[in-house]
Length: 445
Image 1 (cartoon, rainbow, N blue to C red):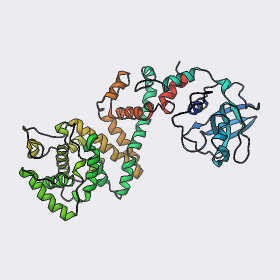
Image 2 (tube, one colour):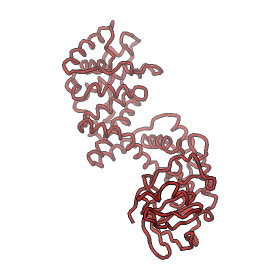
Image 3 (cartoon, one colour):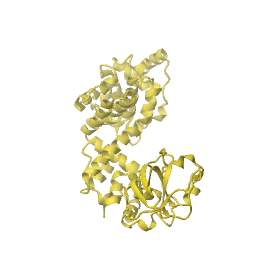
Image 4 (cartoon, helix red, strand yellow):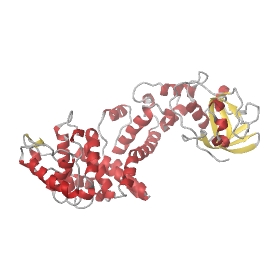
């Protein structure tokens, strides 16, 4: 029979008191065979042999696909649907949905009603109520109800470090796919111009968390097709960046911003440019070295320093070479300024090592991954992951929590995976979708 994808299980707001854990746990119990299969039979007495239970999936349609079963001596292949009560089949409207015609077995905690497909076929039903032990149920409840940021904290290493590592590799790819989805759409909008995509990614990365959106707006307000024409002149690059950022629309005292202002007016007329809104920029609660004015000056120096197209960032595999390519220091004016018209003690303002590594993580890695997927080039995708594995992890409180439990982020790759694991699995308590959580529920005492 044709396999049809099954429905995603979200948080269970109203749980059946007969089985107060949710259908997703019952699906997992069936998939992992955490039930007593001795003498397994349907509710009407036909013997059932589970050749393959199927695999839980999260699209529309039945819960498990790829199942192979022998029922009363007849072998069947298709999908399996799981419910707490068999009457849930009709309550969910499956008897009217052709997608459920592929179901070969109805697995329930408690049988209380016959289930039929759209074609009127009565479904073989297996009841698990008397076949479940309490161990897996108790372990699941402890994880799902656990307090703190890491629900499985008590079970982390030294338990199964290799299994944890394998799962984190999978989670890292999930993170890259999720975080580059918008960049892939942007790449199409940019007519698949790799240099333009690199410009947009670099801009957003320069904004870091506080000013990512204003920098993204700037990338749209100042197309790479315009900026590339003046990129060998740092003064004109700076004029375009500050002007299109909306930061040159006031009266200045210092000569440098007044010259930038005049240059921007001329370039804006020449290329028909309209500035982004200045109100979008955030200065509050930032260190002066991270002010958007300093970041813009650093970005201008980087663009002017680049010998060719920004796509050269995707052609280099060595992290140290990439770091040198991204090193930049603004001109003399910025040695004594963090903002226009506000002189300070002299201090050089090059991009720091940690900031350069963040640019690699948030701009170069996504660039490689998007180009690799768009071109069907596995080498580029592998290089994105390899680059993360060769970069140091960032420092934040969440990674410190993981480290305190024995899961140390020894690279940017591991750090990114742990951040994704926490955000997408731990916080929403998706323990049954987590490879490590599933292992704990299935095997740990």
